[in-house]
Image 1 (cartoon, protein in one colour):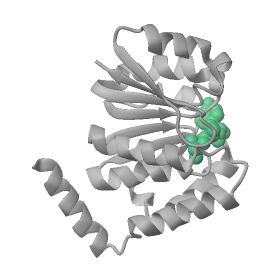
Image 2 (cartoon, protein in one colour):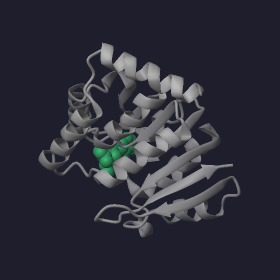
Image 3 (cartoon, helix red, strand yellow):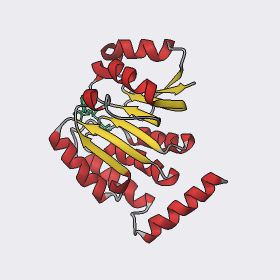
Image 4 (cartoon, protein in one colour):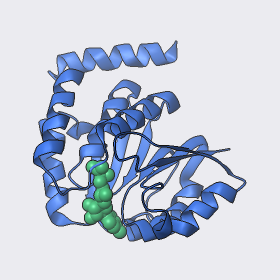
Length: 205
Ligand SMILES: C[S@@+](CC[C@H](N)C(=O)[O-])C[C@H]1O[C@@H](n2cnc3c(N)ncnc32)[C@H](O)[C@@H]1O
């Protein structure tokens, strides 16, 4: 009931603010992915999955490590429009960070996003939890360090997701070993889209 009211209120606010519709954002996402190549974006099917997961968790606070040009962040924000939540996203590269700002504005999701040009390994030491959901998609050998830093900041019942777990297992062996064995986590792997790059979904007990 509380969730229905939140969705209803979000719809009214979106209409009043003349925010792009879901269909308009999806069209823009398709253009971004096809015209801004080389930004290592997830696939649309994976974006849809993450967006749905935001809704399923009823996430209010989401953290993304590895913004790139903002493609996956916009998918996360589509879910957050429905839950009334916000995204913090971290990117170390100035060019991709700037492009993300433009893409967040163009799709109308900028007000939902705190986008930071920073080294996530340093920034994560300063960010306070709790988070409902985390999406890791940066330098693969650092995934183990990201997990170490974010795990205490995720609430019980929250979820840590990570990209490329099927395509790059050798680059993140410590991360994969921990999500499979840490008693605080229950992990499943989903393989979506043509690339089947793999997203790990680790629920915190
Ligand atoms: C695979 S791309 C992210 C793609 C994005 N999630 C998407 O699907 O649209 C990885 C990004 O992580 C960034 N990155 C790598 N190491 C980082 C760090 N220590 N802190 C912040 N960003 C980092 C890279 O610059 C790159 O833009």
